[in-house]
Image (tube, rainbow, N blue to C red; front, top):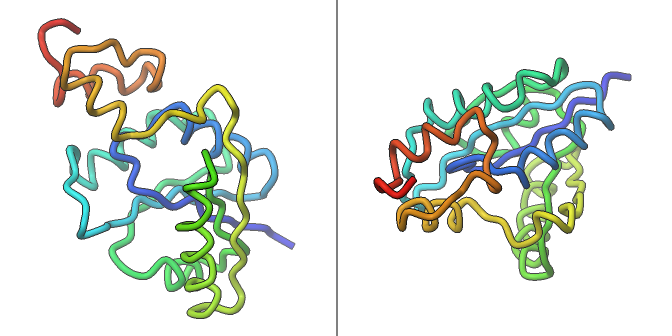
Amino acid sequence: MNKTVICPGSYDPITHGHIDIIERASSLFDKVIVVVMINYKKKYSFTTEERVEMIKKCVSHLDNVEVAYYDGLLSDFARQHNAYAIVKGLRAMSDFEYEFQMALANKKLNPKIETLFLTTNAEFMYLSSSMVKQIASMGGDISAFVPNQIHKDIIERLGTSKN
């Protein structure tokens, strides 16, 4: 049986923490679709197309990973791609409450979909896209937080001359 899973997120921008979850999912499942989702409550620093391209640069070493974007319900995307599960990374208990609610809603909308949680590597527990954007915008060094392939893209968009 072909096991396809989805790793959804806004990825604005993708971080080492995201890559860790994607790589681990890639080693566990036959196919991983990293899907950039649209959340109209968020203000993005990068367009959907830019985020997709940045992710593609960062996961090109993973043969069983595809990158897509979707502007609708995740449960519908899962159904359209015959996905077995949604894979989400958890950093802390505060993530769990929100993700648990989303998992229940997705299960109600698509009873065939499961949500699987992978705990983030301890090295990345504190890391978020918001933190990366804030550090970059204030001239801090983000090289430990994001893949080399997209470091320059982030600095050009958000950084200051200190970088």
